[in-house]
Length: 426
Image 1: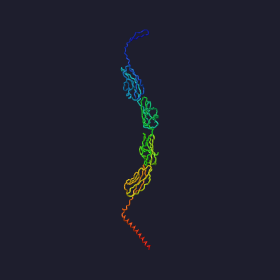
Image 2: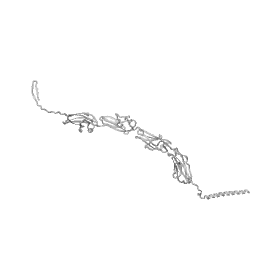
Image 3: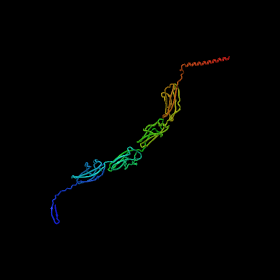
Image 4: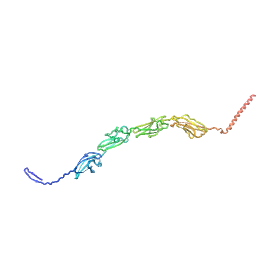
């Protein structure tokens, strides 16, 4: 290299300087541009996608790491590895993208984002499990906590209809009206801004119908006597609470079984004639269903058309005595207290079944109607001994003596009469 200088008037002799030539090579590293995710991006539990531009004519390999973890090689923009993402807890995530060219030049670029790994917290304060409700849609109270809460909603028809809400309120009345009675699954949902979603369910019961009470026995106009009748009923009610009955709209008599007997004291208090029996059932919401049956009570006893009389028969004869009684419902059967000696048939005829011995016997007789009412009588049966002349010792001697005595007296009187005639003749 030659350098010249001037002193202002003339050129000074040139100075020659020798500088060695240096071969300078320019190094080009891969250029990395992170398009997404952007700094401080909030992501959820699902791995986010990424979009990275890498410029290098001799690019050989690309990879990334999450929080300086395992290196994940990629070829195209896609989604971060789900397994690696799941290893990351809640909080910030350092993402580093790397690129290497064929000359071994490596470059990296990084971005810090946030991970929200928490799903919304949902607590159902009301309604409670198996709570019962009627026609009016129930009120709900839920507590939902999430720092990035986005939306809340519920469903009562398995997701066919989702109702969004912002504050505690009542279930949509129109939707409630469309749901049939029975168990309803009420599900509350909440999600946050990164798509984390959570839900909680509670089973509630809708009951708008009355219990159905069926009377199997007794039937209408069945007739009963002084003894209280039995009953058999059926009740259709999934939420049954209490059951009871009344007689002629009187006192309530609780029952715990669908079969049993009417209270005897209550039945006895009912007079002769019609008795109305009501059977009731209520559910836990106090819906009351009932049904009734009208029966007849027959407590008037049969009466004797002819009052039974004492009987006298001779020894060796048989007893045959016909009774006569009346009842509005008819005589159902006859009864006697001594069936070893006597018999009474369905017509009320009393006879002896073995020979009768002499003496007196008492016999109780009853006439029953179909309901256990009866009239009774007590009769005395006398069996008199038959007198047998040849059976009395000395009977013939006494008879002859008597006849002779009578003849002697007559003869004596006739003789006296003749003597008196002779006397007066003279």
